[in-house]
Image 1 (tube, rainbow, N blue to C red):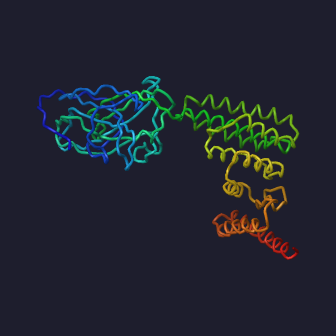
Image 2 (image 1 turned 180 degrees about the vertical axis):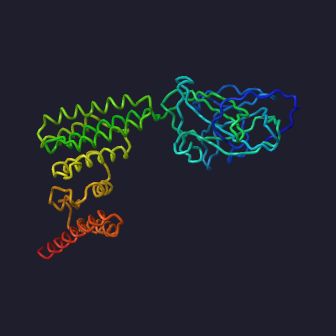
Image 3 (image 1 turned 135 degrees about the vertical axis):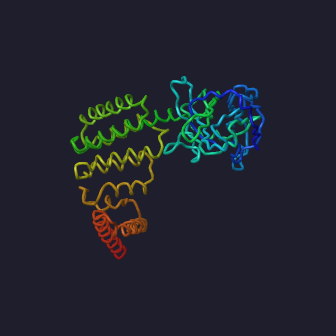
Length: 415
């Protein structure tokens, strides 16, 4: 329970700052009273000394502690507040906010800290953000002692980078008209032992460079880098540039454009049958161990779109992409779904039914039947799709599957 007292009407006004985030005062599930005792050597954080209580100044303080969170003991940041709050009226509705930024490189270079808890995220992002509304009962109120606001499990947070980080917490309150009533800040030095999102951005950039090189190589497998294929790669690059943080946009642009030039030079001097060796060399020379599986599927999707960009997926291009999928270690069923989505039957140059249906020559008859039954269920569900093109593709695939099943039945009879 928060201790709230009336202040003298002659109390000096509180200086106001910039408001950022909202938090319910004293009504945060799972947050209990806690002592300000932190062992930096064991918890990786060095906290500012907690200020003495004040009757005129609004203050905040943040420290780390071990706490039960969802029945598991976790290390958390606990945010507290204390002091005086002036409101324009009694029973004043207020927004209460908490923000968190990484200011390791200075307050002029603030970076967000990401959080995986949905209720602690800003709008359509994963940046830390906590917000709610409450009511201040009096125009002149005083939190006479330190009150816990929120405990945030550190393992749910992703910092910009590994190593020593300087974190800035801001707690503030505003009236509904946007007037800042109070705000206060607290700094915490934290040693982050996990890779940060800027670290992973570097890995993602390496994955993007590999994607571009492979896509250009796939397009060159048929002996040319046609305009339509080039536009697919260009559009893909532009999206990656737009999705990058402002400080990295120029670097992303330069590296991906250079990746195109390098790949065109290498593949342009290689015979089509040598492209597969070129691509395998690229994967070996550009390892992306930190890349997510999503990055790998992104690479293959780009390559498939390039292969189909001119309206015909050449057999040599498709064989190359299949080889890339195997080298990247993606799930074969997921890859098949991607192929079916991007490459309709009519776009295949090859008449090899095994390639179109995803049948492996090394499979037994029963393995082939099982695969065809799965494929048939998938395409039967699409036979009534609202998109006429999907319906036509489903009918074509069902016809191919039925013919292949009949051939398998015939092979049984001759055995």
